[in-house]
Image (cartoon, rainbow, N blue to C red; front, side):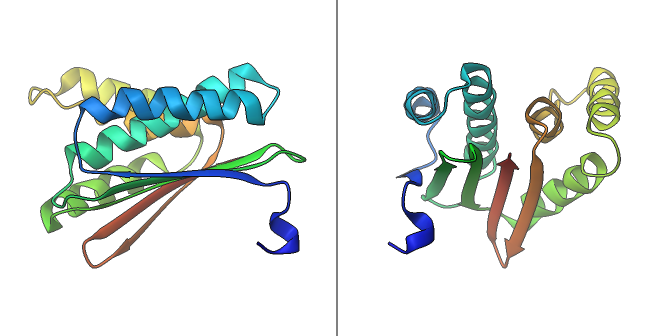
Length: 157
């Protein structure tokens, strides 16, 4: 552990892409955050974001490894959540389209726009998760794709 990491809390979870694990992971993350930071509202929002990211990872996974890491710096209460999974080229293409749309401009405008679009969809998909995360946490949403590995993260300060 480097000197800059002293006092930093983190957790990492890995599991196969199964829906039944998401609620358990969210509870675990929420409890971890509740003892790591003072602001319970912030902890709740971050647990929601982690859960949404996990839902996307499980929904669009093409492999058996879903990975989430949560890093907390107690002094600054800066929190980073990153979810990694393997996805098909088609899923990645769809994710890139949604990400490009919701990551531009004001987070509230992007969220409202996605809600309007979701209301008009007939395929049962809302595609609200990333827009919701960005708006409700006020964080910096990032996405990295390397071959078929997708990493989506949110940094909340």
